[in-house]
Length: 472
Image (cartoon, rainbow, N blue to C red; front, top):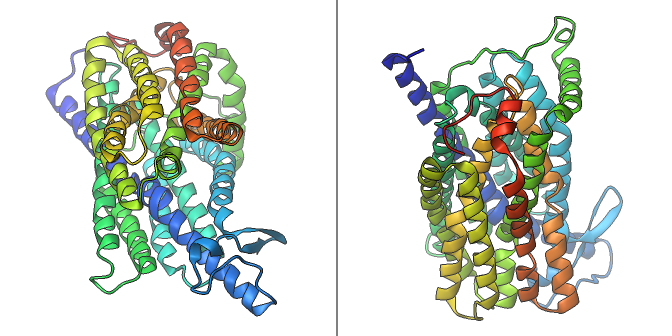
């Protein structure tokens, strides 16, 4: 059936609106999780530890007379009767937030698929996450516990809204449009995250001249991040239609409360996923190389600081380079996928990852230009690899189960995200060198590349009952 121009234009309008949520939500992982959240909450926790030791007995913390906060991070704080150093708070918080996401987000995805209109649910979690982010500005003094609660709420809002957002992808694009749309969205997200972070870093770097502390700058960053997230979410909510499709099922299967039916559908989906072994093969391959991608992103600052001896200004500049180059990389991946297909482009991208990580081993200490070039190389493949993986996976899931499968996709990524950091830490501790630690991460990309070559994605698309794109 030939599509009329009015229908095609309506779909294009939805696609343009859909991309704006990548722009809106990227501020949370970039500004809150990567930069300001870790720095600020650690400082608040260190202040709490110092106050607690000062009030409750001799202070065993290795602080100097000036109250050096770097040393105060070794002071213990307590939660539920457990004592741990303030400096380790952020690592524990990320782990706890991930576990909570693994428990909650798949259920929300099942409920979203059961709903006749996913937009209100996406709006609720997006605005809820944005509000929690804004409220993080209220964290001050010694009340780091409030920051923990608010970050977890923001993380739930981010993870759930993103899963529902991903589930719109097969509903607003044809099989041949999907790679380009996902790449544009991912690229747009890096551009948005970079623009927001640039504004916040200007405020942070100019804090002395405008009469604010570093803590005040972080609080302003939280407020700006939440407003940015909420404000730009209005665009996709306005342009996306309801998409009232429901997954097939009997009346009995779809009876009961939303919550109990959501649990039932989630368990049914997990059980029925075994009927799509090729989809699971792709998912397993993706989980291997995405663990490598996430690890590189998370440890690059540590590698630059500890092994290459760069100061904070170089590391901040590097973060911005990655963000803006990733925009270009996402666009280029979409263009390349139009010529050779998504699978071949992903394999080419993984090959570049192997070369980039290999180059990281040879970057000389103190050579900022070499580090910036390395950041540019990472940026070129960072966004595009994940964008095309997202679009390709959307073609491997049965219709009506998009949010549930993307929940498994997202949660599988989080559940395996400890492997890369563990390998990095073990190699660093056993060899005494971060260079051997960084080069060890090549294994994730090499194994992912080999396994991807064996995944028959066209057969997997047919098995899921979806139309095949012209190129793969």
